[in-house]
Length: 127
Image (cartoon, rainbow, N blue to C red):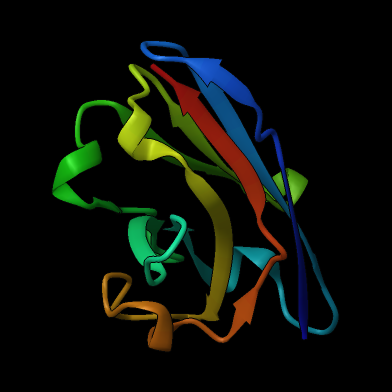
């Protein structure tokens, strides 16, 4: 089992930056063996893939709309994954969730590819 807790969401102006954090607590397995992802859900819409970082060698993946603006990273010593968000736009407004999958081989599979989820943190970007 993995417990995930997101933090860092806030109200920011267009063009601003935020760094989201997701702290993981594992039982018998090691955090470094989990592929980690970030998803978001805007009002009235489904949950959307945003970014992911794999467990092996940490390659990263992004949805086209955030490439060049968002950066996903992980610190295995701290059991934490981050999402650095720059040049924020009103369209980025959503609840952001982190997710985990044990040795996940397909990080961009979508929400069905992740077994564990956090409760989410609200990001609001004002125009």
